[in-house]
Image (cartoon, rainbow, N blue to C red; front, side, top):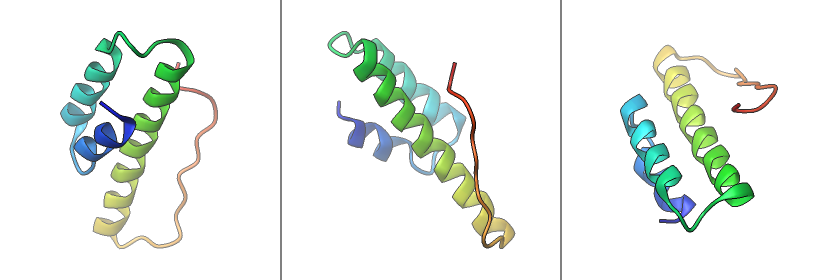
Length: 73
């Protein structure tokens, strides 16, 4: 599974969609170390961006920014 496939599968989905995609990614034995962490960061970034965008659209908010400092643990 590529990072594009993981991102596409989780767009517009709630926490359970993200959790399932994350679990699939973490179970891939072929991907470990830095490549796994990079894929997990991309997946999480895409999920958070989707949630933020959807919330802004529903609320009619314009010009808002999502800022994160640090890592995913």
